[in-house]
Length: 274
Figure (cartoon, rainbow, N blue to C red):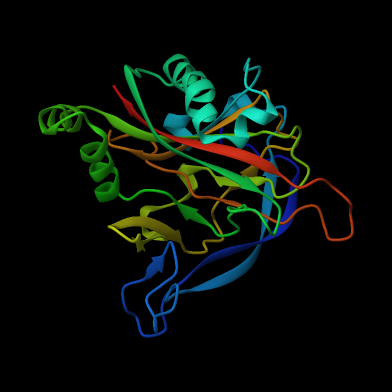
């Protein structure tokens, strides 16, 4: 059961702190217009207990907890595959699609719509995100369906059925030694903890969710995640009666002064229909 208690570590996580003027929170994905801040909200740092679920991964599921660990995944992708976006789409995307069709209950069709490589390197284009968040609101999930469906008629058909957005996460340089992922069991994260943030791109505005600190939230991580493992993070689910989304973040671990390799990972985001 997701309420099981496993050996915890303590780490400081960055939670959402609302704008001082109580305005609607926003964040610019790229450089903001002159005179505007990149974002208008702050961070509330809190030390929390994070339980290691290694050895108990099977206790957690997408429908109950909004995350799931899949092990023993065979892959023909190499480290070099992830240096080239075209190779990622050609070689790795089919693996992700097959994984989702095989492991997500009732999945019938998949649309992979983007990916991100993250490296714990100050010179990297994208680094691990050390802020508690969730990736999709109900509105932004619907807009994703409309944006990526073949046409308006197909979008309406998809929206009448069950649709999910799932982030498929994996390391690409072997066992994770630093900046691991923490994820909160959805059953311990009430909807009132989520705050909509306008996510401003150069050509359109999307929505993500900040997460307020709640001492009752149950935080988990899985130590030593390796290349053959995948973390499925549910970003949204249109079906009622199941976990809707998972709050998650990278966190600083182990303590400073311990020499470990930097984490390198890829996340692929997918629309799952059925």
